[in-house]
Image (cartoon, rainbow, N blue to C red; front, side, top):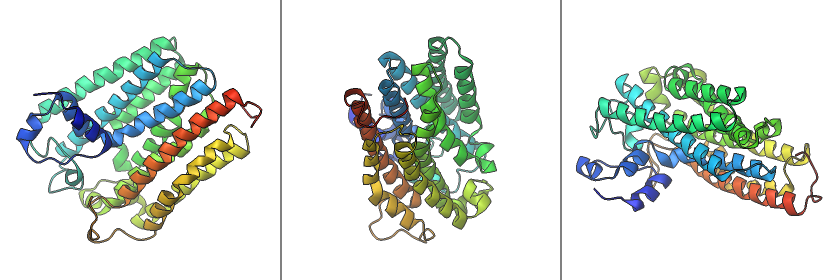
Length: 344
């Protein structure tokens, strides 16, 4: 076994399909973890932490070591959740019979790349690393009640997302909260030592963009979930309603940012750069106007992924412009503070 840095990069950016166990066994530990946890998706956690870090730095509160430890811990926690997600669904029988999850990426349990015991060892090891980062945050904030609450909330969602939250149609809302206002405001709190409601609101757009992927994915696998009794939000409210809700979520992303620029002036107009993601936004909104095609259109590379593919592309483009806008916003605040006076 050798360290495969090329696979680290690839698995961090795109979902990996692999059918040969010998190929799997030859991978290094980090490559296996990145593939098994679907790190191309868990990268959204890093985006949330970077957003919080830039906002904290803009307000004069930043520590590199703390930021890196908390970001790595949350990234690992997200991966830990995905390992548990696969374990739970596999053992409940959901992931059998060519279920949606098994078609778009490696599923180590279904493909017999590892067994239940191995999956649990990876879950425990990842969970310990994530917990250590959380303990560091507790000490860094002097065991603040807010940090304890955030820690507890994150642990509950990690353990309860796959079952029962996802079965109750609450999983998508939990994802919006975690990767939006909770994580962004929480990381900001650890770095700044104070709770800021403007930061909570500033976390809403990215949280909506992440949730839009999840809702879109659950629309993609609506038939499979309904047949297996998995009560996701689209199954609970219906496929057509879920498509409309996802469209509203995408529109709200841009409305909230515009509000933060022009009403409390928490952002400078530099943040309007996110509107350069309008093509991807309009594309996913347009695609959501119609049900999922019965089969893959000619040349479509990612079937059975459909809506979630477009939502994912929007999230990547929007997230990139959001971070760029935040960097420019912070520089303007530092060097041209009178350019757009507002709340700090």
